Image 1 (cartoon, rainbow, N blue to C red):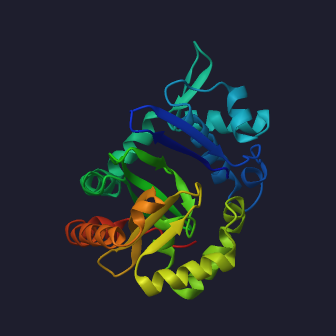
Image 2: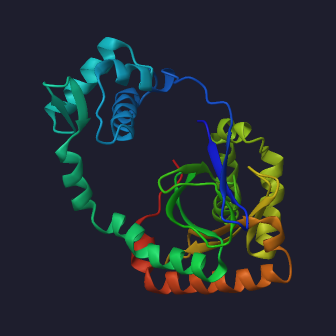
Image 3: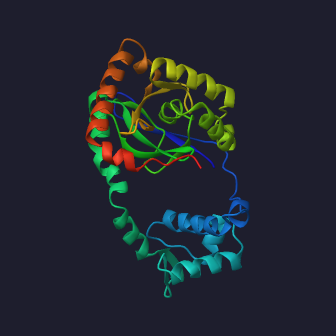
Length: 294
């Protein structure tokens, strides 16, 4: 998986300069979708991901082949199967495929699982407003952390390290690290084995994660410096569900000088207050969205 990061650097005069850093992104690898015990599900997932990425533009068969790495016959059979079951729609006039209406019906039925994203927004926005730095809410999803909420701070120098919907391996960055650190030791080792390839792209070794986990457990919060930009630092506080499982985190990303003592103490106090309120007010929602390690 490739990771692209953007930084908006705004000088006092108000001019904005956008810097882009992107690690090398490999060509689509067809192997996971064409082999293994879950290959049919994998093929369906990569095709749906491709259709979702096209938004309202839709994709032709050749576009799907290019995006997924699937051969023509495999991609065609997969698409027509999705159309047959309402998970995709085919427009004969444009020869393009789109996501199907059945998916929206499933989302509606899922109800409370998606309500968390809506309910968490005020907390993330309040953190960004109070602290003036970019604020995030990440939720555990298997071996990864899913960005479920983001709000931009008003401080003129900022870094956009995640978008809502992005996934990052547990342990890679302050938010994912805050979640990982408080999992059982044996589960941490399983997660490290499962995410080794993704973390290698970010130059984050197993030993480095283990050291970060130990420090996070000792301090009660996670801090990650210069993962994507040397001058940027992230700090995160874990969030528990009513069963006491650490399933999420609030994080702040800012230039390093803004997360040094004594301001760091003030930031953590404000973040912990947000965590406490979210755990009390959103407990039932947090209990329902735990994605266990598979």
